[in-house]
Length: 418
Image 1: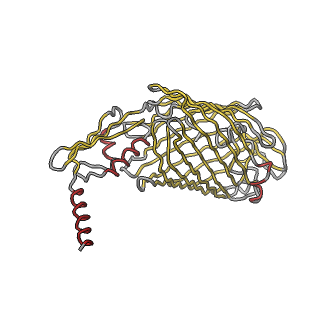
Image 2: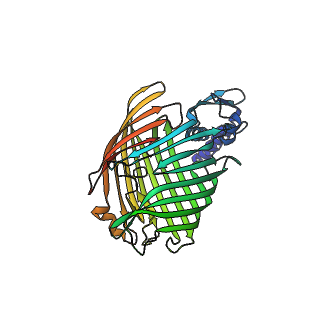
Image 3: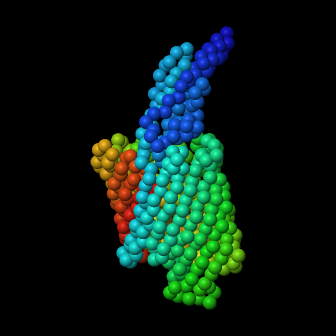
């Protein structure tokens, strides 16, 4: 009898709550972000069932958009067991210049400047490009529309002409090549559900290597011009939540690429890596941030290995592409603390440790524990933030190496390092 009564109560409760309906969904506070766009990506619909979990998911989804600095909701009883749901949106300014500057104690200097609109047409479409000076001139143009076709399907197109002076390592020595990569990429974007996304696409590119100076070897060509196709797949699990400059939660992103080549000097290969990111709030003003990168590629014994040790990618202060490998293990951990916050301005400091190790081309996994391959760089930095402009974070970090043959240097940039 008690069991029957329990089942009846459960069924009655489900029926009662199922009758709670949304009479009206109101979007307010948005100026440039289209109301129709917010309605299209929201799981709560006018006339649908009132579900607090869906509302919370909508809040997190909105706060992940570049155009939204913060979002919150209200639920107001109207009549006949119906409720009005109000989504309040605080917008970001989304036409953003970008800047990255990196130097080392070897007097290297490079920079990248760009301009991006992250809310084109009020529909969360990113448009923009950059110019880079790293010994040579480079540029790129980017288009990304995650919800172009529906609330789950989108498209990304990237055009790039990148030229750098790249070190090539062989026979315990190195030489320097002028490297040029011209590429055109198309990606299909799919949001499977609230936590999971995938990207699939093709990239056609031409790589050109021209010897400049340094050591030579008859087995290492001094000029290469190779046409390639790249098949790319990205899977992302995202459970991050944002509160202005603070982040909490976990995110994992797996990136896999298969590259075909028309040259025996640059054979076909695969490359895959996974970034694991963990963020935790510490008190009212602290944020502990962590990134672990695990990566492997085909273990070809080539001086043109795909993973690089670089200031702007993985280890702050180490220098601009100082080594290459076919496997990588990198840990970045930092504590971020808000020293000052008033209205739109935030001053944040951080203390970090960047550590990484690489597998030599053609080597084995023992290379990962070899002292000459391990780079450890503690450091400190500052962040100057604007809370109402998307990614408006001026980043200055100084890394000081404590491992073998270490360097030190400043790394400037826009946005958090990870």
